[in-house]
Amino acid sequence: MKIRELAIAGAYEFTPDVHRDERGMFVAHYTEAAFREAVGYPMRLGQIHHSHSRRGTVRGVHYEDVPPGQAKTVSCAAGALLDAVVDLRVGSPTFGRWDSVLLDPHTCRAVYLEEGLGHAFVALEDDTVAAYVTSTEYDPATEHEVHPLDPALGLPWPAGMEYLLSERDRDAPTLAEARDAGLLPTYDSCRALHPGLYPPGDRTPARHRGTPA
Image 1: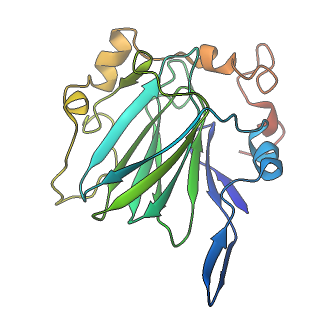
Image 2: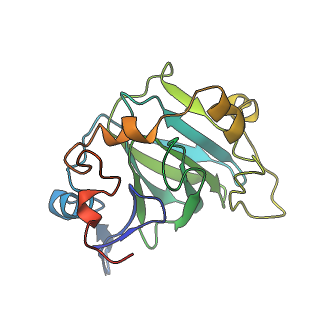
């Protein structure tokens, strides 16, 4: 399995080995040893679910209160989607930045994001199925959203596509509005969830100390 950290600390792209033969294919999306080595801790399982989307559907940018926070792994079981991870942690060195990964059932790539990061995607084909593994169960009282078409964010949605948004995503605040209203998680509250990775006074995850930038 190949693992690449994205431009946002706490977000990773996982590219597993895909085994194909005349019967079809087999892939392991998650192995604890590889995940723990890359991220620094094992994935906690709270809920598994999936969404089915038409072409042009945009879901997100969604995030949860911290604490408790919610980490998630996202893959694509059918169709294709462009996945975006947004740093919503106030005080983070990369606050407001994003990175994106193309997910499809051919490469079998997956994206993992830690608590406090925002998640969104656009379906590039009809009948796109996104599969999620989250560290906590869904709680509508703790989940929030930032507008996925906020021009200040500039997320990389394809041009010339008619976007389909839910009512709550259409009515979501911009990043600046959410920050000014105190709705976003703080970088320090997110770091506190993984104290072994962030020693006191050190803003660099322990897994990256001594690694060239």
